Image 1: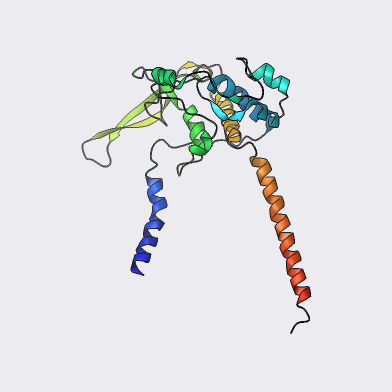
Image 2: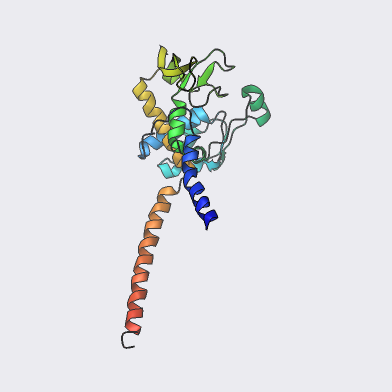
Length: 253
């Protein structure tokens, strides 16, 4: 009995430990953008900016028809290297070359928004914050760094849209160790402007993240509708079974 109480106490503390271990840069909440126009724009951004190095091998181009795109629109606007509409979203770059060029193989993005969910925030929150917190760092091989993933191997592929920024840090006393100084993030400083305003850039990133979240489970909306229908059917069937049972046993004392 004593062991059971101790086990329950440990299990109760586990969520707190998991949250405490998240640490790192605070994640911004990703805007919810579920309209077709936003998802179509996100698909265009994904193909143009992400699909050069990252694959999405669990996704076919023709699945974009679920977003209201015709096969001709997919061919004319999203296929650039002789792919077919029924092909998977793969890339030609070999993993060995990717590791030599970037130091790590770029991950497949098919379900990245699910993989990055944690106690600190949802997967879309993580990707949304990550894509918006790149800054210029000449000490890095690519010339870029990131607040969410320090010493990131990925370059800032959206820099022309966002512009070039540097990070501002302030020195403060360490609250945990007397006499020691720590550096705290104090925002970004715009060095050169991008082709978009900060608000426009955030909107574009939100569309891209919304598409990546849709791509992780294209049938999610259908699954939710089907689930509601199944629950309603089961509730009706339960009521019917209860009524029949009451009818069969009404004369039994």
